[in-house]
Length: 111
Length: 116
Image (cartoon, rainbow over all chains, first blue to last red; front, side, top):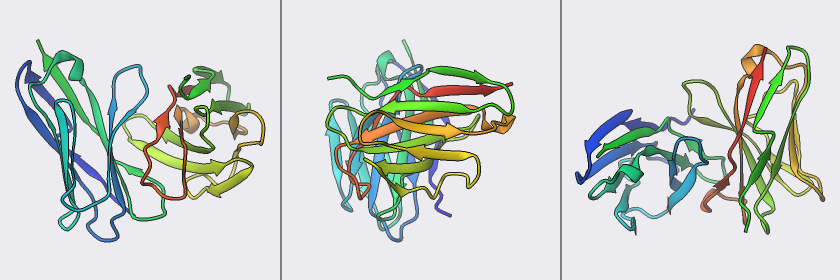
């Protein structure tokens, strides 16, 4: 059974702080790692899809790195804003298989 | 360009009734995925469909649950003889291409099913 772990479970930061959180996944048979952002009362929204070891992707103040050999990905948010408050989900695939989601990291940015 | 649509947004059923959840993918998307989120749990894959075909139903309970994605019309997730344990949020996602998990998925707003 594939297991995807996200830490921390929740996080409170002050506006302007930078923050990061972790997604751990099995290091064997890696295929793809997805990050999604899920605001309350909205739908999950895709941030990144990463497929190569060492990949680094960026969208505005949000970036992600990928280490497939050790089985982790970091999501970074630079200069957090209240509108960044959301649950951040990662999802892993080991090949031509469905995505396995973590439980998410719930971020609250306090103004 | 409308996103993924799901209806109803909220559905209340008594034990033993049937629940039908609908999902219209984004325009141009022919790959649909259904996920379930139980209370305090993450999103769990149920079934992956392409037009008129079930590609992977490994996450779907063997009994009472079925899914279809006809040539015309929305994808339907059907739960027969619902029980209290079926109470959950059901999300649909679509992608323009499938076959692998290297394409991002676009999610609908979900249907919250409550079984009384």
